[in-house]
Amino acid sequence: MSGDPTLERIAQGNGLALFAAGSWTARFAPDLERMVSDAEKLAGSRPNIFIDVSRVSKLDTFGAWLIERLRRSLTQGNVEAKIAGLSANYSSLVDEVRRVKGTPVVETGAVTITGMLDQIGRTMAGIGGTMVGLIDMLGAVLAASGRVLIHPRGFRLTSTVHHLEQVCWRAVPIVVLITFLIGCIISQQGIFHFRKFGADIFVVDMLGVLVLREIGVLLVAIMVAGRSGSAYTAELGSMKMREEIDALRTMGFDPIEVLILPRMLALIIALPILAFLGAMAALYGGGLVAWLYGGVDPEAFLLRLRDAISIDHFTVGIIKAPVMAAVIGIVACVEGLAVQGSAESLGQHTTASVVKGIFFVIVMDGVFAIFFASIGM
Amino acid sequence: MMPQAATDAIIRVRDITVQFGATRVLDGLNLDVKGGEILGFVGPSGAGKSVLTRTIIGLVPKIAGRIEVFGIDLDAASAAARRAVERRWGILFQQGALFSSLTVRQNIQFPVREYLKVSQRLLDEIMVAKLGMVGLRPEVADRFPSELSGGMIKRVALARALALDPELVFLDEPTSGLDPIGAGDFDELVRTLQRTLGLTVFMVTHDLDSLYTACDRIAVLGNGKIIAAGSMADMQASQHPWLRQYFHGKRARAVMG
Image (cartoon, rainbow over all chains, first blue to last red; front, side, top):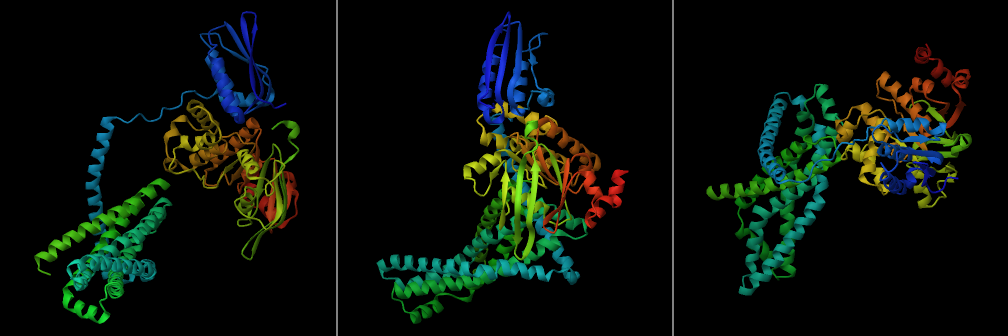
């Protein structure tokens, strides 16, 4: 007998009876809501309204609440609408919903101009906060390194080696592959355009300087920020979410020393190695294309390369690498520790870690370019 | 839901075997859960209580056996039939498993919004009603799970499990991590809800108080099988060594006074 729910209206004298029947359950909630909304308009039409629920075959919270809502909107002044024929099975359920205060809290308001200005202001102020956070972390890491230098037993070698494997050894294939391809592309483009004025051979100069000085280290740093910076943020962030970092602190360990220093150190060792491998792969790729596509045979390529580049180009590139690694590591750790309780926050901070990491790497590269130009390297 | 249906088995588990690698966790297990009862499910830590729960709800694959819920064989059922069954049960996970990026309001409304096309007003009203049922005030509606206490998380998770008015609820250690008063309130709450909504409750628990106050029947898991099932009196009369230790140990005596 649990069929579709109905709500019949039957006039009785000067009053009105509403007969509810069928199954008043969540399954039929959309229909029920429509029927109840219609019936609510009857409020005030008759002096005496009651709701008969004796023929309701099945009732759950949805049905009980809608009947209660109907009763409330039909009640006016001191004339209370009555519910009749309630079976004993459901009386406790109806009592339960009767206690509900039908005033749900309002959702947050619409977007306003002041709200948007407020948001912009907060974002700008947040940039200052970010800088302070980064400097704070740099200081904390330096202080922790100092402590470890004085008490070398506090140094976590196993952890450092583990992270070194993750960020360096396992990154080698992808870094070498991508830099190899970039070397090929630079070489091909160079030859294609230089050939127009017969300067094919100068592609070697371009490739050598570009790869060793800029592209090699910059590209590898960007890859590391995307690959390892994000991993650091996600690891530290989820540890923060599950109170693991608080647990460490209460056991008397310094999270900077235990978690962040090994990661930073691994990154600072890894990036120069990866940058070197990347530069070699790019030169190899460029040389290969120059030979196969441009007709510059390997012997000529090497001869030209020896003339075109000096050790300075290589030094400039490799000096930048550990500094960029430190920047990526600090950004990643700051973002990781800033994660709040939700999964969404973890996502936001991981994104921010990669975006800020890459941004600062490029800014650092610009600062280095000015510096090396002024000291004549 | 109705009294006459109370004797039918809502969950019928037959010869279930679950294996992780070489470890056999459940070994030809049989269990019936009757309509309208609160079944307390106990057993030593690591015996596979959570595994059985997760096997019944389909989160852990089994290598043999048959599971019927509401008389529907879950392996043979079509995707649509399975979804229909899933709509009729609610699950309270051990850690609550609230969606951390949604507010309490959105957490409770989420299943309703997915399954039913109803107005925002009704969604809000039902949300407030459910919060009231689990003993929370409407003011918590716009908080995020990370801003709630452990007990509140359990209550909100229960409200979400009840959002669609299920006929069957699985509670995985609902009172673990609550203070004794909070745990007592929670048992009372489960009892009240069971009476009010005519629920069938499958409760994994370690809490002797819960077994005494809330459960109609107790099933005990050991060595991958149900070693005993019955009322509290049956459990206390049992001669099984683990049961004797469990129900006559120091803590049990304290509970029984």
